[in-house]
Length: 95
Image (tube, rainbow, N blue to C red; front, side, top):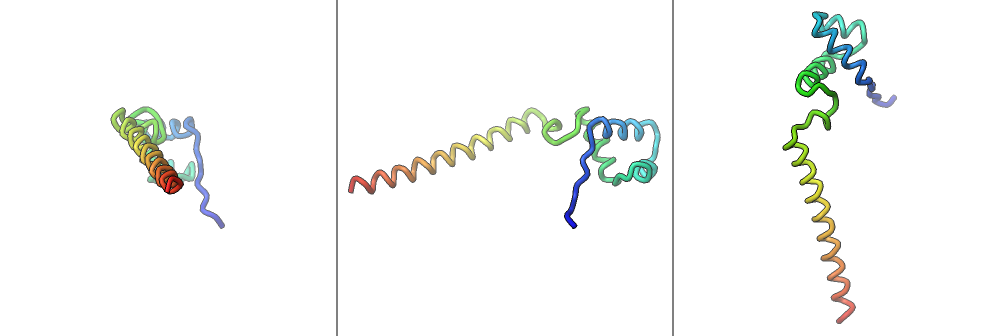
């Protein structure tokens, strides 16, 4: 038996957040919709922070820029390693 993760639509998550904000208890929502306390609390926190769900949407501009810069650094390092290897190979042919 594999570990399966349930996926919920953004509409469903919004509905749960609205129910929680309207006064429904977490335990009620857990029983009625077969959810975990962690999921409910995370959805409420994410929606209050950015009005969206998902990691990419919840990043600040500086966090997004930081991610892009790290990706670019990784790419440039790979490119640099390729060029070093090519220089070594070309250097051997001349000898």
